Length: 358
Ligand SMILES: *Cc1c(COP(=O)(O)O)cnc(C)c1O
Image (cartoon, rainbow, N blue to C red; front, side):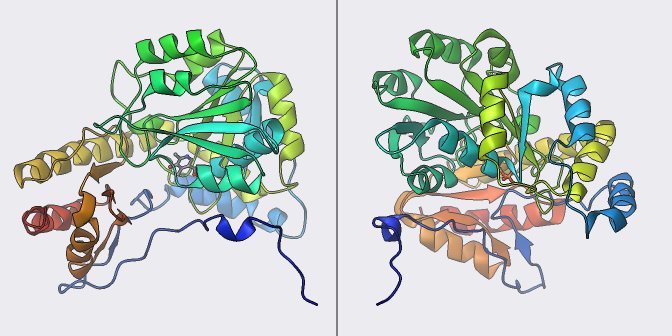
């Protein structure tokens, strides 16, 4: 006799982490496959982590995360009761699914979107409902509204969308919300919100303040560069936030993660300068790749998307040989994170050879 893993488990995909880069001919090794922040942590954040370290090892962290909760509530102008944390917002997404959807329930999202959604939905035993993006890589919100059934419990709207970088407009989300029943929770996943400079874009917190069935997901992993510390949160109605706390893995938000979050909120001006540079680099890369003949979508995140279709694997290989690891979605496209300037230079340098494969 051997143990048996739950039936259907083998058909759930595993999460694929971005690959590290191989060494390029000039020694370059640029990991542009995970949308990480290329900057070293700020000195003030490292100081806060060093100060928190001795007391964070043998003791459990506070589950309530009172300092980070207070700092965020003040920053976002919401009540502390509205905030629920996880070890990264991917854990919060998992909490949301577990708290709202079980066997027989449907969780909807656009496709292609964040790779974790189908995995988390299936792990929770719920049914994923994927609504194709439009031809230009954007959410098709009218089609998503059409796909709502009485079994729909939760809808993820990833804005900007990972991996296409597209946004949903304020007007389109408003029209969408008019069609979503009040018992269905709409989650605006704003992992890349700090890089979004589109004035027409929907703003999650504005919708949260108007609609009780809206929640917002934020993370410190991307713009704030704390991916390794694992800290993300939801802003939701108190009943929903309570349910998320119940669904949370106890003590998953470490004391170091909490300290890193507080220190980052105190250093927002410095972090904004880095975000501004990354946004400018995104525009530089977009312009150069288009000039090389790659059909780059307009991105509002810290990555660009090449809808390379059948050429995706071959183009990925061209970047790999240059020492640049990109994220390949075989048969569909390639996502390239915006890195440090010299890394982006290498991406631009390779782009004519990549375009020749289209
Ligand atoms: C990166 C990402 C997240 C969360 O990352 P964490 O490190 O778990 O906070 C959530 N949603 C999307 C769409 C992402 O791309």
